[in-house]
Image 1 (cartoon, helix red, strand yellow):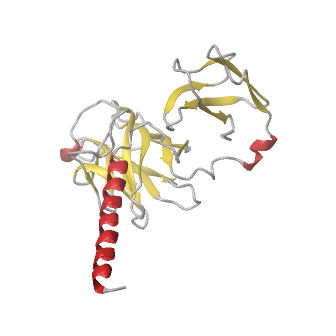
Image 2 (image 1 turned 90 degrees about the vertical axis):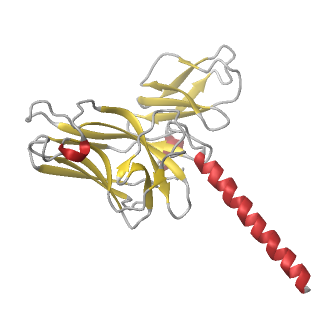
Image 3 (image 1 turned 120 degrees about the vertical axis):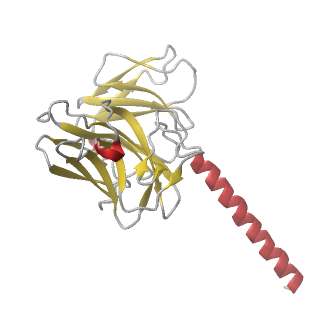
Length: 269
């Protein structure tokens, strides 16, 4: 290979890397709160923190990738009085594996369902501590509204992959003996395997009719059903139903859909 070809090859590789970088950046920037892109799944961590006593805290641990190791430590703290010593929810990512989208230093941005995660006007933090929610004090403000089913944006630092965490919180106690709470209801994960039980092939779960021509179908299961999710071919969740019902309804648009069934013990089929 002569020098001219070496230069041309190096330039081609560099061009490919630049194009690949921008494609990945564009892909990550288009992740939408509440959606489930192809190659991802939702899991439901059992995280509900409550604190009643003043000047005390409680903790929980979140595994975003479900690999058996803690990714984020969570602390819920109840101060007294909150006007001076605020109630707070804090995230402490472990070993800089994950970062969170911010709207100001240390304060995580919140997104509604359907919002593009961490778009223009937001930045990715490089911190060891993130303030997810707080009430009281000079820095937190004194609003009384709780947060219901909002989304945080996370980024896996080693891969650049972006996902969301859905949560609710209530840090205004009204009367001081009332509790403050923080709950994570669902997490978008890039690990598809660990939350699907190997025992699924022994569970008798049948869908009929399949295919359906009028959009109605039934699920026959040996186990109680907690949640049914319907995804289109793009991996977007288009419908969800809680609990067992006699009939479920497919979306109005005809097509091929994937049905994910969550049993009462959190197995997924």
